[in-house]
Image (cartoon, rainbow, N blue to C red):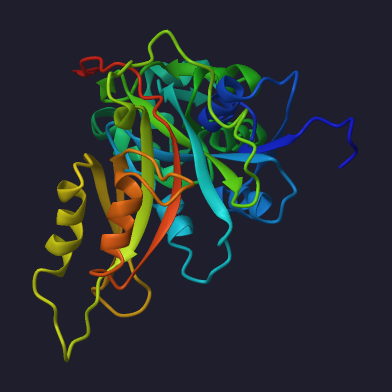
Length: 323
């Protein structure tokens, strides 16, 4: 990369995806080149091989939970992304729309036969889909903006996409229905990725927002993500192993904020556990997080630190039913 070139930031594209909005909110286009990728794994791969400075990926939605595609890449069962760490987060408000080629379809949804979107969107628009589009065949695609692009390129008036209003404008689609997600205040959280050997954190996180929740405790100002597995074999079960691992964080007064599981890939019904908590790993061997990691290593099978970053969670707003 020429020295004069702006650092590249990979995101789940194409343009007008919600991940694109998160990237724009985090990295100024004047200083960075935003590089759309086809899949979430493409973002991981670009960060891992050093072809981009940072990556932005969706992690969880406030109404539909975790993005399992991202969790599976962090689980990294084939050791492809050993050097990736989380160094920041961004929150984007999500308002889904129904987009199509023929505006007249808005008065007769029965004309819609094919529906395209990212799998996460289905769970965020369940009420609307149940009421109006039970008959339509659903097609999972890599992003909501890709769904809009595919409908625009299809020349098929019976096809529609669940995507953003911005994507509809970009791809010249008709707005068939607006704000179709079940809950107002719907948000998606995105994580910013870096390589382990890139310690320049000057641009890793979004600029402070007016909605930023300020805290009095330094521990509350940071988050940490890690994964671990349990010591277990069928011939030597270890009752209480998960409780022992989780209790470590309580003893060190670290507030757990989420727990997720994904299949271990080693044996049926064995899992990788992901936990997120308030606090950060220190470079020196001091602090409550470092102490917790040391104790955890004695009760789990193995663990991997996935990064610590500044907490950017907005102040909570009440969620209400949209429909």
